[in-house]
Amino acid sequence: MPALVSKSLRDYRRSLIRWAIGIGAFFTLYLSLYPNISENKEIYGAQALAKYPGALRDFMGGLEDFTSGAGYLSGVVYQLFGPMLFVVCAMILGNRAIAQPEEAGTLELTVTLPIDRRRLVFERFTALALGLLAVAAATFLLVWLLSISSDMGVPADRILAAHTGVFLLALLFGVLSLAVGAATGRKGVATAVVGVVAVGGYIVETMGKGVDWISWLRWVSPFHYYLDGRPVYEGFPVGDYLVLAGAAVVLLLTAILAFDRRDVGV
Amino acid sequence: MTAVVETEGLTKFYGKRRGLEDLDLEIRPGEVFGYLGPNGAGKTTTIRLLLDVIRPTRGRMSVLGMDPRDPAVRGRIGYLPGELALEGREKAIDYLDFLGRARGGVPRDRITALAERLDADLSVHMGKLSKGNKQKVGLIQAFMHEPEFLILDEPTGGLDPLVQQEFLAMVREVRAGGRTVLMSSHVLAEVEHVSDRVGIVRSGRLVAVEDVAALREKAVRRVELHFDAPVPREAFEDLPGVRDLRVEGAAVRCTIDGRPDALVKAAARFTVVHLVSAEPDLEEIFLTYYSENEEQEGRHARTGVQEPA
Image (cartoon, rainbow over all chains, first blue to last red; front, side, top):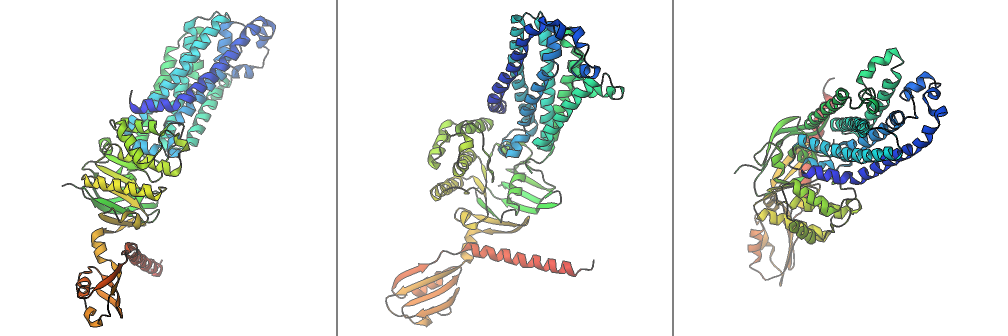
């Protein structure tokens, strides 16, 4: 493994463990509520949820039926809080690739190593992707085991499909913060951009279904390519996931070109 | 032999602010070059340009015969940043191992030998290192891969006098091994004892480059001679380089420009019981460069005011 990748992973280690535990705790809490909820069809069933106002239902991803295993996973776990936790984790790790060490001054020695600037960005990206993959893999195993123990009746490949989507979405936002950091060297700017794209993207994708004049914006929202394919119900939305992966690659190339051109630490 | 550093018209502007303008600099193989100037004069800008941390606005440079854009050249350089940032829970030794691996491998015992020499504790988390210990870690990483060219930005800041002496010894060893050093400082006293040549940079421009030995020869020094009996004034009058002569009984006081040879030979005719010679104050000589330059700039400013708008 290149020295910079293993060094970055070592720097990430504590953070990765904490995020895996935190996200795992969230999944455990939510999934442990499922047996209780599935028995209360009059509160959480399809008919009960249909009484909520349309806009709220849109915002929460449709509120179809929380009493089925697939409905609960799709509408509660993988709808909003699950992906958002991953996005925040990815943003923090993405910031630590360039912008944060640049502001702290520790990037100065790193860029004077005999490592090409383009390779430096790529190796930081590799560490980011591997770190996110580790958190995603650990939490996938957890969700899968919990879904078995609480008898959700959702096949493992559907959970894997949804979890892969969360991973790709997180990777995209991680690379976004890395790219903004690589281009500007400012952690605050990167955080703001990720925040706006994540919150705006989620709102546009969910509310856009019912509001015509913003519905076209759904096509540029990263959440569209994660939520629209309904992976828990339908399995891997291959085309959508390729869009997420492709966008991450484009951002990575942008990051590499931007960082290669500019002054560091001024 | 090709120069270790060669720049031509090297210029860096940060937006409209001048960092460095039209720098023509040559650093020769095997020399210790002292790079002097007040804070903000452009020393760090020059150093960061040579290491490709920042890119020139215009001008040309080569380092070790290569374009600084080529990452391979940085493997042959050891660099101590002026504002060294080390942080986190990582132990200093682990960080040094990483830097060593990234530079193609450095034996662990070389790192520990340097640490012993500088009396640095490498088992401490980097975020908890004192300023002096951070500087030691910075020096270790700059020296540990035995680079052909050392670039040290304000290396002695935060070091106690004993460690400073050890550091200067390390610099002398590097020079003895035929390797090259560029060392910046804002005070001459820090570099004059190890430097072969010094360059002064001021407000983004190189004001002068001088040979330290030649400077020392030019330097004015005060000399006091005491004899066992009163001496005649005539014996010391009109000696080349001797000024401000005062003969009081058995004591002679004067200042000499350059070589003390004539004075020594004149004194040798009598019995010398005591000789005092103050170290020449090179700082003073440099200040004359500065003040001349200041006067010039002052004139420019005045003519600028008189120009019609």
